[in-house]
Length: 104
Image 1 (cartoon, rainbow, N blue to C red):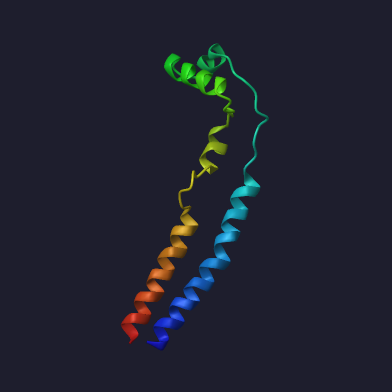
Image 2: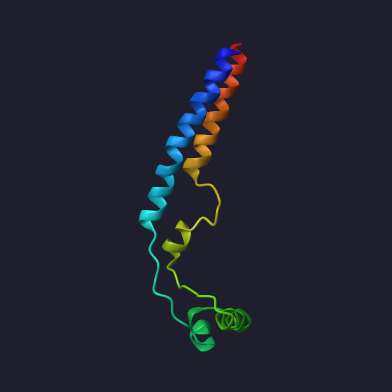
């Protein structure tokens, strides 16, 4: 039981040390453009359908800001999802706990 508690404590310590680093890397690589209002014609030239352009215009009228991003910038936005590094850390923690439990 003592080794299980040690493994859990070690895994939590490792996770708390690596998570801020992962977020810092994402924040440094991401940049935002200055907000501006787009017309529906501009949005359609950008590639949005007329329905999507109308929805964006409606959101802008409600006070939302729309930002245009390159595909590279958009790929860095995770929207609250875990990155590959975070999944690897979680997997490592699970393996450590399973090994500690199996060793008892």
